[in-house]
Image 1 (tube, rainbow, N blue to C red):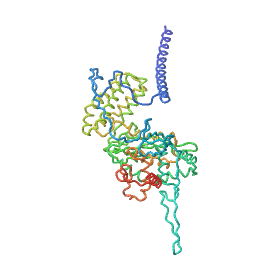
Image 2 (image 1 turned 180 degrees about the horizontal axis):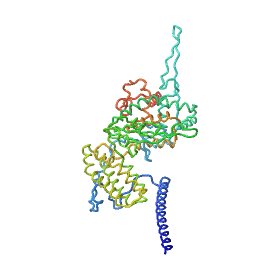
Image 3 (image 1 turned 135 degrees about the vertical axis):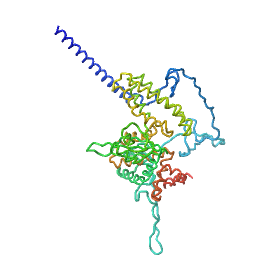
Image 4 (image 1 turned 90 degrees about the horizontal axis):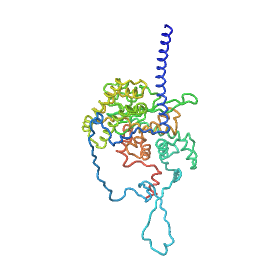
Length: 516
């Protein structure tokens, strides 16, 4: 009997061990499956966070009765009547669909016909074709007469001063080098190859030197723009990695850009070697306003240290976590995404209506607040009443949202706080695309140079400024502009004070005179 009892006990222990082992293997299998599906999506799948609406054509909004099971009210949409443009065409157009504005040069080619001698031309037909010249470089040749005076002395007029002293580069070349690299992601070595193919012989180190010297001229403007951003009531901040400087032979070290976006469409890209909280303190100082960020703990630590600072966080990062849980928990993740989708729909409606701050705050209180509270209450219920493993992606996503619910509610109390940091992430994209083209910065100083150019060029895009016109003007103006008024050279203020009559390069003046 004792032997049978021992055998039964051993079998029970083995069964328990097998069950525990099975649960561990099942959890491990689910985690590896989720990872494999994630890698498949990165390689072959859709990376967009957008999701289609339900098949019945009804999409939920915060506080929607559909979430509680009550009938869905019928909705009507008012469509504006179609208005056809009258008058002249703002752009020239061809029947084949080629459209272009007045800034595109047009070369006319007049064709003859066999019957011209025997008839009269009654009209003309025009056909447009888009053509392209290889990379075009122009050498400006300044010819200065040497005059012998009556007293025997020789005199000669001075050559026009160059932006970089005795440099061989015209200001137009400096602007184009920067725009090609930082806006169109063309590394300097490829620009060097293009110059060589066009018959220009320069050392690659010369191009690097031109970029660094140009950045030195623009550095005071960059700092003035950063100071302007730090005066914003609402500030958005993020970080993105960049390879900069050699850690050891054959290995690059990782540094970080810390982009800061102000509420007046200005952005700056400070560079730092680390991702520590100390960098946030150095960049923001004693900033006292609303700081919008993702869930990185460095921002939370900084916000806890600065009195009067309000920390808001991004709903897009919350949504991202639930998207990762769709494959494992499709029903729960789908419901969470429905709540968040309704929130974004309401924000999109606010943007279309362009309401005042008071009405925007009132609309958020009426249409968003109840849904946000219901969302967090539902998450808390799911974690309390359902048996979910800590490693479950839905559990991780729910904990992420609940731990930050106070920061996620800030937009309900401040009408000027965006719902997410997507507007900043769009401006980080040129850095990410650049990493796949120019790959790295050879030194930390080079990374700072990238940050200076990227700050000014991105702000030009936000302000609707032609970056070539801006750089050509500012690189010449900085030598004659009062240092105490350097803030007027930032793109936002330059647009108000100098954009109506910018300084031109000699090449632009030659082309303009030839055209006239």
